[in-house]
Amino acid sequence: MPAIRVQWQHKYRKDPANLDARGVPVFAPPQYGSERTLVIPPFLAELLERHLESHDNELV
Image (cartoon, rainbow, N blue to C red; front, side, top):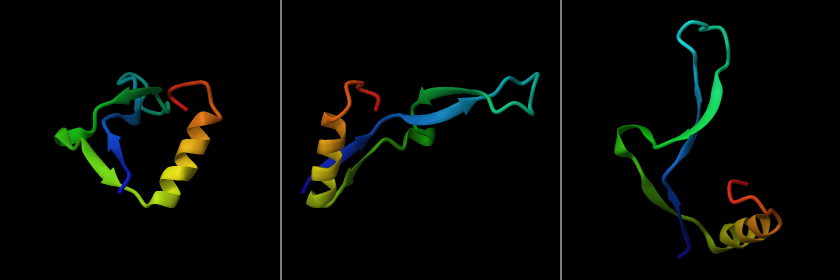
């Protein structure tokens, strides 16, 4: 069964001086050490593979 690894998540780092602002996007490890491997169905793995092949950026 195909699987993907969750090691980073997208977060917004806020400026404590300006709590109304949305913040700056950053990649950070998941909270509480919750890195994990998710099993995905084969059809979804194929869709993901095609999507990733269509982009040059590794961060798609």
